[in-house]
Image (cartoon, rainbow, N blue to C red; front, top):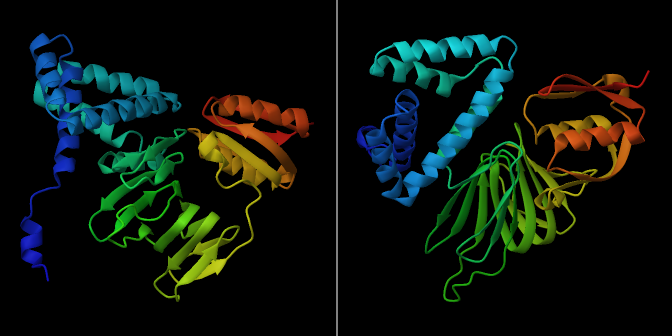
Length: 333
């Protein structure tokens, strides 16, 4: 058993240190962009290891995302510019501290959900809001990440484990390529463990549960307070901290997002809008009086503004843009 006192003395995770270094370089360059020596030092650090470059790219991407969102908040433009200008007048150490606070904290009231994305820097695989990515794992398994998702890989001689900490993934897996071993392919969330057997399945982590949808093969659910449950193709389960129960199929194709699509079948407009909202920043809402309207069709996710513009052509609704980041659907007068 690990000694708690020793655990407290362990060195920080190296990946955490790399991310902190990337943030540090970003802030130093922000305050001294015209310093060629500093630029060269940063380039040398980035080239020293592939993890350095990966962390650098993630920091730059998220910095731009948060910067754009903060400027979209009413009244935040002046506040942000004031902070930025003040930082330029301060000493180097104070400026780094002030700008670091802006980058790391953003607007706590408005960007609370988006701040969780900072946790993704340390994940082996991660996507930003609206982004979808696919990966081929060492064993030949295909891993697809949906919008705003994060997962870690833990493959060793005994197991093939994927830890889903945020969002949604789709896996297409086959038998273990190491013929002399039996390593199950496992997905772990905070609600349970999912064991795939020559299968294609979707695991979606929500606030109080994990949703499992199997489209091919079979998956066994190992939940804390339930016996192992084998789920066959075409079945859907909801797994919470207390139980694993079958649920009706969703009113959409559970894996169409991997192809950049939402495919609906008589879906409630309110549910559809909630789903589309996962792929864009800001607020997307639907008036209660039109929430029960139904729609079926194929919708492309690469541009959610264009997707939304299609809805008034088929439903008695209109779009109301307060800003690009604040959109509501209302009944057509």
